[in-house]
Amino acid sequence: MKIAITADLHLTTRSEHAERYAALANILDQMLAARINTLVIAGDLFDASSQNYAEFDQFCKESKYRTIKILILPGNHDARLTNSSLTAENVQIVSEPTIKTFNSAGLKFLLLPYKPEKTIGEFMAAHAQHLPANQWVLISHGDWAEGMRDPNPYEPGVYMPLTRTDIETYKPARALLGHIHKPWDGPRVHYAGSPCGVAIDETGRRRFLILDTETAAVKSQTVASEVIFFNEAFTILPVRDEAAYLKNQIASRIKSWGLEDREYPKVRLQVKVSGYTADKRALLTIMKENFRGFTFHRGQEPDLCEVAVAEDINRAEIANQVSSWIEKLDWQPAADHPDKHQILLEALHVIYGT
Image (cartoon, rainbow, N blue to C red; front, side, top):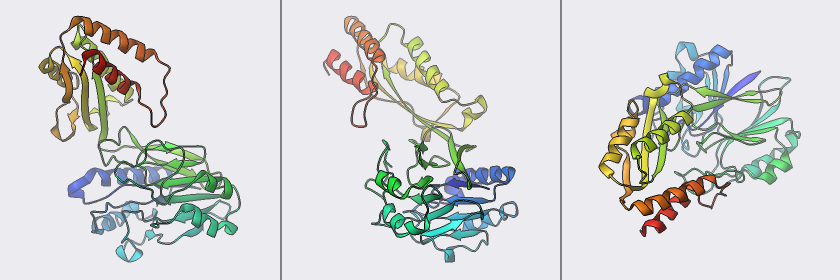
């Protein structure tokens, strides 16, 4: 048997964010096509600003979705969500830690909703006698305390953490978590990520997870979301042919997105440029021309606030040589170290004396 897992939809209303409902509908449609009839939502189904659950309730009652059982683990944004909040018969709110099996021959599951000022390890310890090593799966909402370089930038602090010691002590076959919006996969710990970007930093195609309840095998499945965010940063040098240089840079960046042409209209793009140019007005024109066909996020043009005008040919040549050296570096920075983009910017400040 297989089940689907998602998290962090942050639903509000259709009028505010119809694309988030569309992402959920796409997940359910793919489940129907694959004959998967259980969806677990690992927290933050709703945004904290939303206390009206009526639209979601009606959505779940739609005739084609009534056969799908939806289990919701409240996250830190769902503090008021209980079974009394909804009327759809195919929806269950898991408000307390629950051990469940989805089929008689399958693994056990510890379904663990978010609890403030608690750790996931505390609940694992409390239920350990019912969870045989490597024969159970954790689904919860919180912070994986190790191995994540990108904590949730919108919610500083630690939310119900899970540690490596917890994993090694209680030995779940898998730990599937909500809270971090970026998709991430470790040997045992996985974040499905938000199925529809809720902020410009949640870039690229989104996904949900499919888990085999007998083997604990996890598969990533793409969500055909209506909006795909990209947040791009460029470092510009005053090269002899800036137009050709930028055209190649932009073409390479668009190719790295891995999108099909039919997905281009879905893109919402934010662009920030740093560095030095011989003609700032021409630079803006070049950026806009080479991103023609894409929609800028909230109608904002490329941000050139950190671009300075530089016409010194000798300094430009030095800058280009330094850029080439930095690009060839075998540099894989740790979380608190600068990346190549930041190193180049600092080098440019030295070269141009700014």
